[in-house]
Image 1 (cartoon, rainbow, N blue to C red):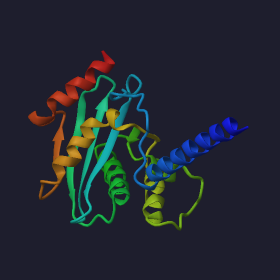
Image 2: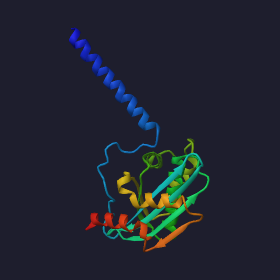
Image 3: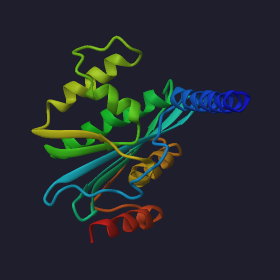
Image 4: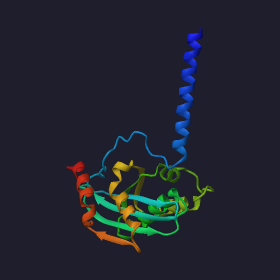
Length: 203
């Protein structure tokens, strides 16, 4: 009996520890614990994908947005780095990345597009069926849903950080920009290796 009781205590303590670990993970910006996707995933042939990401410095409230549209071969159609002066949180910055990224793609004439973000919380909020959100930043989520209606066809999905590297580095670069910087059918030299590495996926 004592042996079984001791074993039960061990199991209980382990479960309690894991529950605490899980709680600490979900309190912050959630990422997949095990990232199965390690590289960018190309869209179907003839389609385009928009990847967006945000960088955020809590102490200063400064943020940066990165967005890139690529074809099924991984080639860059357009890219953007945009500084964000008044972000209130990492989630707020990720929402703004999605909003500005969608506008960037729409203004360039992309009406059929797949969109990837590595913010699970933002993607989940966008996919909720609620007509109007009363949560913090809920009005911005509603803006995203309205922006989606301006596309002929659009799908928003979660991508692990490994599949969002180009947008990630663009967002980090935006922290050092004074204004929006864009590239059409090219990328800066410091980003070429990241793009080329991803293009191996579609070969």
